[in-house]
Image 1: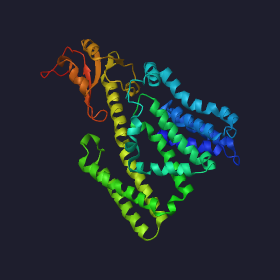
Image 2: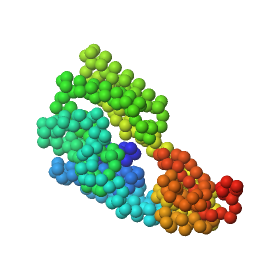
Image 3: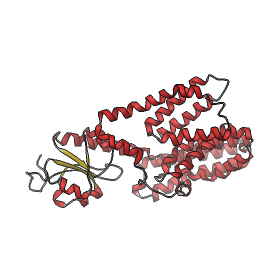
Image 4: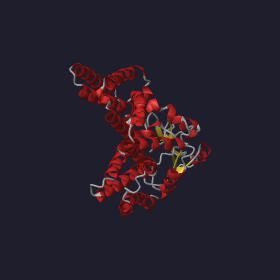
Length: 394
């Protein structure tokens, strides 16, 4: 979501920089700042979410003469400095992270591998009930004038499609990778509605009310039907979202009956946004997933002596930051030999824990949940002293 914020702000700054009536330099500078923050957030992903889509738009609209190339080149060091200071810091201060950083850029071909058409099949999952509005977007585009296609409508729709197809080309695929295109797609839909005056008829108002009404029903089904591992952290949060959306739908119908179509449409659209945020909003779980490994790694740093060797079977890169020392990577076979020494410690999660020989399952530290639903364990190599239960004597 943070990358999504920097992406849409970069689009705004780029669009304003094309306006001859304003001072382009400040908007170009803002663009470089948002580009740098995007790279700081998600590294090379900004090439797909910002640079590539804007390049496609400029080529399609033939507006390269409107681009202030000199200003963009002159302010390029701003985005570079914002990004590179972090990588230089990690490279110098954390030598054990160097290979991890290289791997993040080069070792993605075997992670989450899916076929080219993967995202086409998951469009309903990405857009939710708003998927039903895509035909309206397509018809509105073909009805738009050439000037409108070269304007903001072209900027946002071409950018969203460029991100979508660029992501399709990569072997590594996850639905949430496409979240940064959602604001651009929403703005394009809003512009189509405004350009074609769809909001003046009954079709859009009624369809939006139907979509808004679907959200509480889907959430209600989610509360009762979804398996525990797919639900959010709190049932209260689910019921609160349901109550808000149900209230929006009721209020929309009241306004519609009172002749306030424009207001009813706005409330219905907000209802759809809230519903979409609910399904894509695993940010609560994600935040918990980040806190838990950090807490576990900090506890590992306290427990493992400085002269001991530390290994892992789980390649979560942030461990290295929070532990503050090199962590050796092992597979199952080498881990068995690694745990023969009492000065060796190994981090494992649930599935790998069961694959370790029982004599080596000497737990020094554990935490559940670790990431999502896993439990993490810190194992110690064969110690010289144990209690009656076989546990390590601290």
